[in-house]
Structure formats: structure tokens, C-alpha cells
Length: 132
Image 1: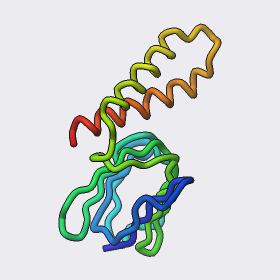
Image 2 (image 1 turned 90 degrees about the vertical axis):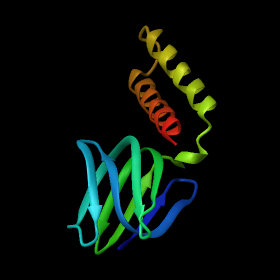
Image 3 (image 1 turned 135 degrees about the horizontal axis):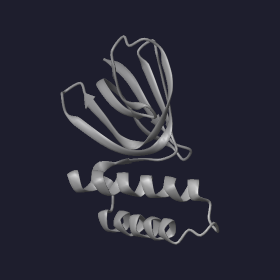
Image 4 (image 1 turned 60 degrees about the vertical axis):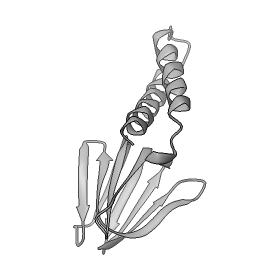
């Protein structure tokens, strides 16, 4: 068991003792259990899977950020984080369609990196909302 805090620029989204997490690192998903070695890593848009102490799973859509783990305290600083069951699927689909359209019509007039990041965030939210 260890302490997990998920913090966005707006608020502390989640703060509880947990059994484990699986987070979307930039080089692949990584698991954190109690007494994990200290680590700092960047995160990409993806699903953050939490197993609480009762064995229940909680999923968040996160849009990137950083994870720090040390001395059984794990902190995730995320650009955004949403509970899977709070994602508005229709709104997420609309965002995905807009992002896809922006990328298809990109003729050097948009910031392609930013458009691709928006597409990945929207795709992640749609995928997770469908599973929930």
C-alpha cells in the first residue's frame, strides 16, 4: 500500500492509499507497487489504471504529465485527468472528429504537433469512455 496523488493545474483530482497503478509512460506502460524504486518519468495520453486496497479498479483518462514515486508516495502531475465514468462520450467523439479534421486539412497553417496531441487526447477519452 502506498499514497497516490493525482494533481492537475486546477485541483487535486485523487488522493488515496492504493495497492498498485499502471501508468502510460512515454516509452510504454509502467506498473508501480509498494516499495517501488524511486522514479521520475514523463507520461503520455493514456489510461491510468488504479487498483485500490479493496481490489477495485479505477480508471482515469490522463493527457500527459509526469509521475514521481519515492518512499511509497506517488505523485502524478497531469495536464488533465478524468474519471472514466465521467467522460461525456458524445463530447469526446466530437473532439476526436474535430481533431481528425484539423489534421486532414493541415496545409502548413496549423501547429501539427499540437493538433496531433489533441487527436491523441480525444482518442484516449473515446476509447476509455467506450470501455466504461
